[in-house]
Length: 80
Ligand SMILES: [Zn+2]
Image 1 (tube, helix red, strand yellow):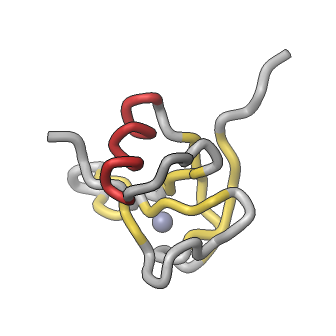
Image 2: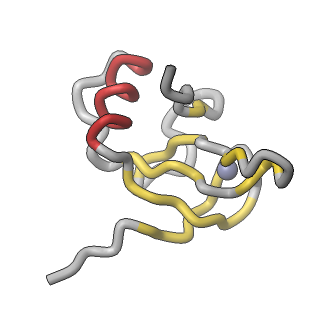
């Protein structure tokens, strides 16, 4: 059985439906540190390209069931 790791979801930063993906194991660990949360398994990250020159993606995080899980949109910080 295969499970899709990509979904089109609303992004609170981009303001519309955009492709999202689940976090990698490394990103889950980083998100837990960044947010001070113990569980981020239902977090999805926006893959919308916000800079066509660099290909940089939005990286705003949301929960599967909540477009706005935080008071303000939170982006996963890029790895060091
Ligand atoms: Zn976005």
